[in-house]
Image (tube, rainbow, N blue to C red):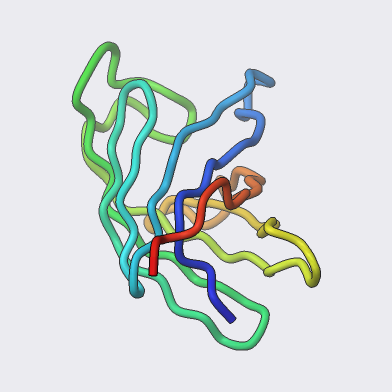
Length: 115
Protein backbone atom coordinates (compact mmCIF):
# COMPACT_ATOMS: atom_id res chain seq x y z
CA UNK A 1 0.00 0.00 0.00
CA UNK A 2 1.34 3.42 -0.96
CA UNK A 3 0.44 6.48 1.13
CA UNK A 4 3.25 8.73 -0.12
CA UNK A 5 2.38 12.08 -1.63
CA UNK A 6 0.99 15.47 -0.73
CA UNK A 7 -1.89 15.22 1.71
CA UNK A 8 -4.12 17.71 3.44
CA UNK A 9 -5.30 17.15 6.98
CA UNK A 10 -8.77 18.34 7.84
CA UNK A 11 -10.76 18.35 11.03
CA UNK A 12 -12.47 20.40 13.71
CA UNK A 13 -10.71 21.69 16.84
CA UNK A 14 -11.93 20.92 20.33
CA UNK A 15 -13.51 24.40 20.32
CA UNK A 16 -15.41 23.61 17.11
CA UNK A 17 -13.24 25.59 14.66
CA UNK A 18 -12.16 24.06 11.35
CA UNK A 19 -8.47 23.18 11.15
CA UNK A 20 -6.34 22.14 8.22
CA UNK A 21 -2.81 21.97 6.86
CA UNK A 22 -0.57 19.97 4.59
CA UNK A 23 1.63 16.92 5.06
CA UNK A 24 4.14 15.42 2.65
CA UNK A 25 4.52 11.67 3.15
CA UNK A 26 7.83 10.56 1.65
CA UNK A 27 9.34 7.10 2.26
CA UNK A 28 8.22 6.73 5.89
CA UNK A 29 8.84 10.39 6.75
CA UNK A 30 6.43 13.30 7.07
CA UNK A 31 6.94 17.03 6.66
CA UNK A 32 4.21 19.63 6.84
CA UNK A 33 2.49 22.42 8.64
CA UNK A 34 -0.31 24.89 9.03
CA UNK A 35 -0.63 28.59 9.74
CA UNK A 36 1.27 28.56 13.09
CA UNK A 37 3.10 25.23 13.45
CA UNK A 38 5.22 22.93 11.31
CA UNK A 39 5.64 19.15 11.71
CA UNK A 40 8.49 16.74 11.12
CA UNK A 41 8.24 13.02 11.84
CA UNK A 42 7.82 9.51 10.57
CA UNK A 43 5.11 6.99 9.79
CA UNK A 44 4.65 3.21 9.80
CA UNK A 45 2.14 1.17 7.85
CA UNK A 46 0.75 -2.04 9.31
CA UNK A 47 -1.76 -3.46 6.89
CA UNK A 48 -4.54 -0.86 6.58
CA UNK A 49 -3.34 1.03 9.68
CA UNK A 50 -0.96 3.98 9.74
CA UNK A 51 0.86 5.33 12.78
CA UNK A 52 2.50 8.75 12.66
CA UNK A 53 4.85 10.23 15.24
CA UNK A 54 5.86 13.86 14.79
CA UNK A 55 7.43 16.79 16.55
CA UNK A 56 5.37 20.00 16.33
CA UNK A 57 7.15 23.37 16.44
CA UNK A 58 5.64 26.85 16.63
CA UNK A 59 6.86 29.41 14.09
CA UNK A 60 4.27 32.22 13.77
CA UNK A 61 1.50 34.00 15.68
CA UNK A 62 0.07 32.94 19.02
CA UNK A 63 1.46 29.68 20.42
CA UNK A 64 -1.90 28.65 21.81
CA UNK A 65 -4.48 26.09 20.78
CA UNK A 66 -6.40 23.47 22.72
CA UNK A 67 -3.96 20.83 21.48
CA UNK A 68 -0.81 22.94 22.06
CA UNK A 69 -1.98 24.34 25.40
CA UNK A 70 0.42 27.27 24.98
CA UNK A 71 3.47 25.05 24.43
CA UNK A 72 5.66 26.08 21.48
CA UNK A 73 7.00 22.54 20.91
CA UNK A 74 5.47 19.13 21.60
CA UNK A 75 5.17 15.60 20.22
CA UNK A 76 2.04 14.10 18.65
CA UNK A 77 0.86 10.68 17.53
CA UNK A 78 -1.70 9.88 14.86
CA UNK A 79 -3.44 6.53 14.44
CA UNK A 80 -5.51 6.07 11.33
CA UNK A 81 -7.04 3.62 8.93
CA UNK A 82 -6.45 3.77 5.19
CA UNK A 83 -9.90 3.64 3.60
CA UNK A 84 -10.10 0.98 0.87
CA UNK A 85 -10.69 2.34 -2.64
CA UNK A 86 -10.11 5.91 -1.47
CA UNK A 87 -7.33 8.47 -1.10
CA UNK A 88 -8.49 9.11 2.48
CA UNK A 89 -7.14 8.10 5.88
CA UNK A 90 -9.47 8.45 8.89
CA UNK A 91 -7.96 8.72 12.36
CA UNK A 92 -7.17 10.68 15.50
CA UNK A 93 -4.27 12.92 16.49
CA UNK A 94 -3.24 13.24 20.11
CA UNK A 95 -0.41 14.70 22.12
CA UNK A 96 2.17 12.15 23.20
CA UNK A 97 1.96 13.37 26.81
CA UNK A 98 -1.87 13.33 26.89
CA UNK A 99 -3.53 10.53 24.87
CA UNK A 100 -6.98 11.54 26.20
CA UNK A 101 -6.90 14.89 24.40
CA UNK A 102 -7.51 13.74 20.83
CA UNK A 103 -8.54 15.41 17.61
CA UNK A 104 -10.28 13.48 14.80
CA UNK A 105 -8.52 14.24 11.49
CA UNK A 106 -8.77 12.90 7.99
CA UNK A 107 -5.77 12.87 5.68
CA UNK A 108 -6.63 13.22 2.00
CA UNK A 109 -4.06 12.60 -0.75
CA UNK A 110 -4.05 15.52 -3.18
CA UNK A 111 -1.03 14.58 -5.31
CA UNK A 112 1.17 11.52 -5.79
CA UNK A 113 4.94 11.69 -5.91
CA UNK A 114 6.51 11.69 -9.36
CA UNK A 115 8.16 8.40 -10.32
